[in-house]
Amino acid sequence: MRTYIILFCIFDLNFAFGQSKIDSQIVVSPFSVSTSNLRQKEISKYTDSINHYLGGKIPSFLLNPCFDLQRNLWLDMHSPVSLRWEVLENVTNKRAMEKIIKTKNEKLNVICQYSSTAYPEIVIPMIDKSFFELLNMRYKQIK
Image (cartoon, rainbow, N blue to C red; front, side, top):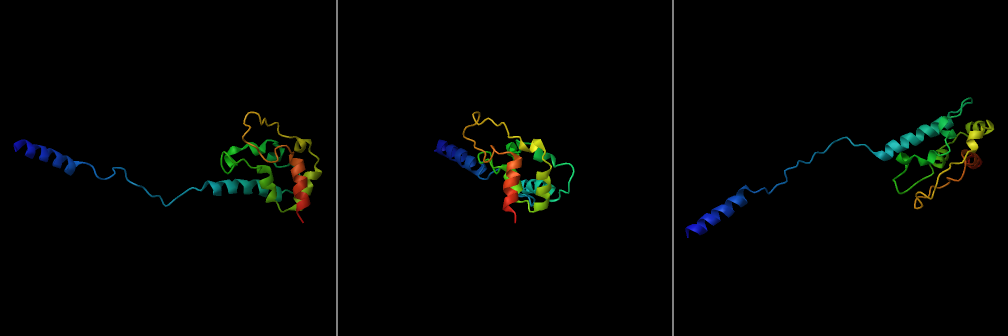
């Protein structure tokens, strides 16, 4: 009988002192960082630089033929987008685009030498077009 009491006490004490709650606390922060908001702000900066172009030096990102390869601005790593086209879709100043096109800067005609053989599953839309071609396409769309 004594052994049963001792066993009962051991198991009962184990149950009584065992952890039934999670030790880690859940911390809720009133602040959050939305990556989509940060992404949209970056896209807006590029769009604004075209919309406010008055002449002179062309915004430097327009001279980067591989601008689309900035993966930090993609929606996610497995959904590549044409960042150049996304920026140009938000451009509304046709006069500014006309001034950029009329500069006839040869660097606008350069096509990105992106190797799709390295990552065949990643297909970047419009990667085979130059910024000049995309500017002309968007220029024709704006009324």
